[in-house]
Image 1 (cartoon, rainbow, N blue to C red):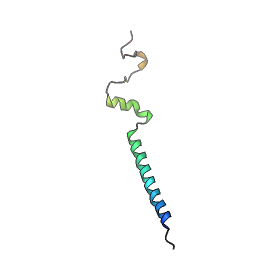
Image 2 (cartoon, rainbow, N blue to C red):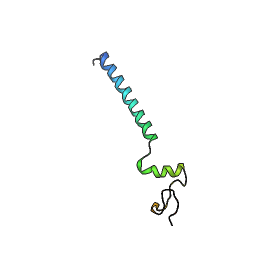
Image 3 (cartoon, rainbow, N blue to C red):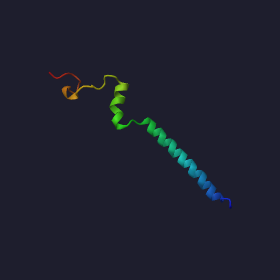
Image 4 (tube, one colour):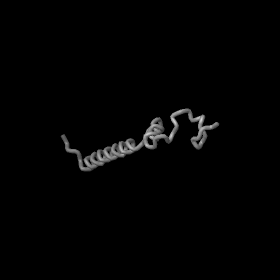
Length: 67
């Protein structure tokens, strides 16, 4: 078998480094991002009582009961 020449060896090394870097960046971004369907849950965990669990149509914008 022929040994790969210097240019193809450099290309393979750069390709592997690029894919590894891209996979790391993708994992890092996904671990810091909250899925849209989990955002209310995250807000309740961070600030308990920040969002009402009941029907919000009965509450005004200042979270006071409407009479």
